[in-house]
Length: 361
Image (cartoon, rainbow, N blue to C red; front, side, top):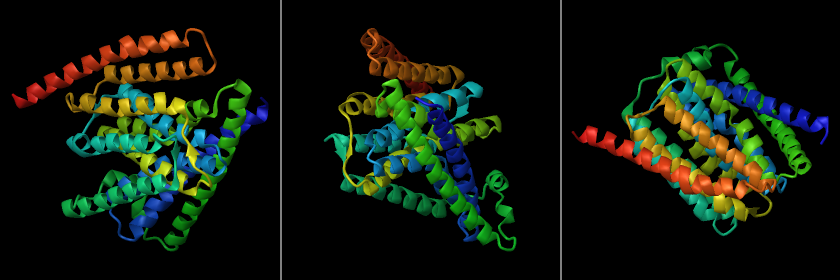
């Protein structure tokens, strides 16, 4: 392992975050010039922007034949989004959860997780599987557009201020915004190349599999835009946006990122037995856990955020221990699966049941 490995990793992360920021700003302003409402821009362009690093890395990895990194990046990012990012954000300030999120978006996130798992069950994701996932994200986006027109939601002043939509009428604005989009895409592609190359070198040097590196180092790195967006929203008091950002990003990761990666891959994207046996079920379990936690009072409390963080630390520790052949890795995993997780599940279900009874009363 050389110094250049860390240089590639650091440069890749910086370029990915910068590219996502530039792409979001340019695309948002460009879309506003064509009369697209801020609501749709937020649900589509911004959702794409915060998931752009995952898209770039997974597509690049699939194109280069590193399927484990492509799979690990998406699955690991979805786990990190809920356990790490929501956990950290809720620790900063309790988060508000809207009813629409519980009734529509979280069930869709669970459905997308189950669909992806079913498609990968045969050990690979084909171009047909990718087409199914990508068609789902197109249908979801179309539904958002139709429902927003029906509801005729008002423009969000905070969003306009953040992305400078009031400046779109300036001369040559279209050229400037198009240039921002192109620059953002170039930064994303360059950053993904650096990050994938550095991650593969790091995995080989440490004796870790590409899947584990994708589930941890790359997943956290590509989730930095979601982390920044959610924590900033919580600090500003826009706590419902912090939760919606995570749920929307997870949907986009599964349907669009894996869909595109499967479509562009020259061969089938192999899904390892380890991912099918452990990481996919963890991702589905995390998605399912959102429903009772979100439903209990329509908020995520600080102690629940700290619980999320604790589980993410335990999950990451288990991955490293199991992959490096530590003797107590199996005992650690059995303790988590046999005692800690069931006890937590019962506690969460009891809290959700009490909240449901209070609402019925």
